[in-house]
Image 1 (tube, rainbow, N blue to C red):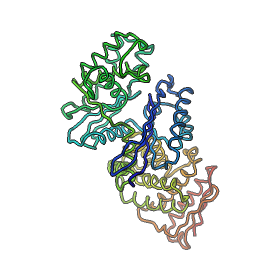
Image 2 (cartoon, rainbow, N blue to C red):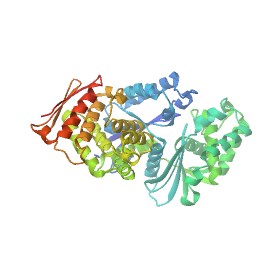
Image 3 (cartoon, rainbow, N blue to C red):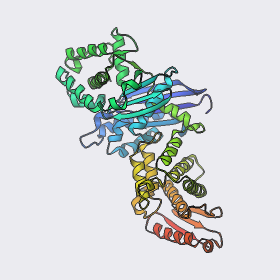
Image 4 (cartoon, one colour):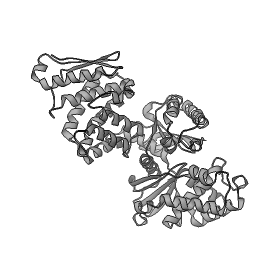
Length: 495
């Protein structure tokens, strides 16, 4: 990456949307601009986990403003990440389709583990270099992430479904504060976080850091009222709790450093933070400057460096974990990408799809670890239900669909096949699996795959069918499989 390159990260949080723009210089990022808008999407989920129209409009309007600022940026310079609210929303695609149009860039809905990884990446990059073992806590609107790590390496990650917006809505819906409701909210938070004691044992880390909204705002309030700057103490939390109880209601709360956008969700976030202090017997926590958006920026740098893309490492780890046949995966990947290069349009979009096709090929047999007969079903299930560092939920689902569709009937993927790029990927993977059926490298170099107006045609050199009768028969079966899909045609000129 060249010095001076502008990079941008968009964080679609449950309480606020944030835009961070930085300039790359010698491995570091210098802030150029930071925008934050309180959108409160987390409050827009109804009992059926559908995002309401008002919450959608607030999000679209904010992203339209961010999109105007991002005009001129290229896709590889921007990463937009959505977290817990859109993980939960059953109608998230309705929001995302419009959101990506107004923003002008893809939006990734990431898993809780990926959110935690990005948070640690951002926190660790903005802390002084140290060998200390640290616990990082990020209390968001609808989820709380906890990470244990050392240096730039996150070792243990977890995401828990509680946060400032969720807890404020559940335990302080009318903005009233009483000792009993605060205690109830703390006890409920402890019940959710209790297992964190086993996952992040106090004996295994030395310093606790807090990232992002709740911790940052409480640290600012304490500092503005005479407490030590850049530090949250147990006595400070007790003082803040007493101030809430004396106010009795959010509208009566007068406190230096309390911003209007934080006021409605302060009590819920405070209850969660107090629960963490009690569970771990903490005397203090240090607020960290880094956050998810900074981790997303540094992830963009890693993706541009050789071997730096965490997704590459994740794919290799998955292949090893599920004992995939490395040689067969390499053969299928080589053939699939060779065919894809013949039908892919010469643009950046197809280049990214070629990379993802290669990953799907590497993982196409991971389901064999469970069952050989239905390995494509099991492989698809694994990809749809695991935590894979670096990947968005949509990326994982697309790979799961490729793995599911590598063989067998195509009707199960008819809706996804409406996407031309996916159809191109899928036919190349299916043909590669077919041609590599003998688990040897096939003679594919003289084959030609053509695409025009919804029709694929594979041509083989003269005499190929006589030399490879089993492959020729399998190609005939493949032609019949595509005849049952209305959107596409596939023919094979087998000689």
